[in-house]
Length: 236
Ligand code: URA
Image (cartoon, rainbow, N blue to C red):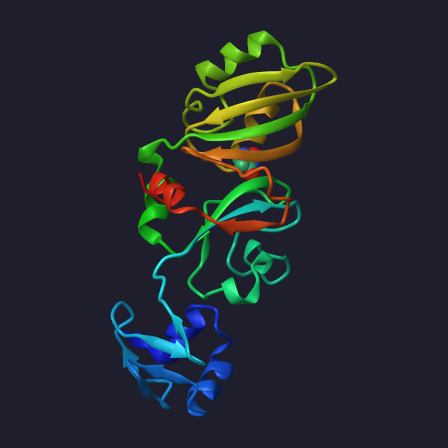
């Protein structure tokens, strides 16, 4: 059971105060009866709610795929910085959303935004070793020998060396390009792994998480809902 005004704000029908006004004006019915009290509790799964004659269905969970742009922090709020939630349109920005995991402020690419804590826990739990693949550009020459070095695990100054990383070289030159798949998520891990072999990451973009690949039609800053199939895959 949830409050009628929360039901409608969660579903992007307007801010709490707009919704309260609409309800008081008699624009909302529940099971065919006009309800003028926004605080009334309804059954979000069974009751039929109409706003201006249009049925509004309740979605308990939301799953968005964002192509995170440079310059946004992966947090729900921040005093000084723009957060990834600022990229959502007002009608999508329900209060319980959070980024599933973290990308550095200057990292781009795949970030899931959801309100499903259980799914997030599964994805983020170090025990589950979910694969994360990054496209990376570095200052320096990535050589074939680095493939083995990354595979053995790298000392990035933590208690243990990293778990094996799978390195695929795309281009080797003064600036090199590669894809790196890792199975854990230590702070700045990709940058620190390259730093440990004398290279500086100049561009980093996550392209895959588990089986979920970044939709390359999304420009940085754009997002879309996950399909049902993608959502099921994500939940595992
Ligand atoms: N590794 C990093 O160094 N930064 C990220 O944002 C993600 C992985």
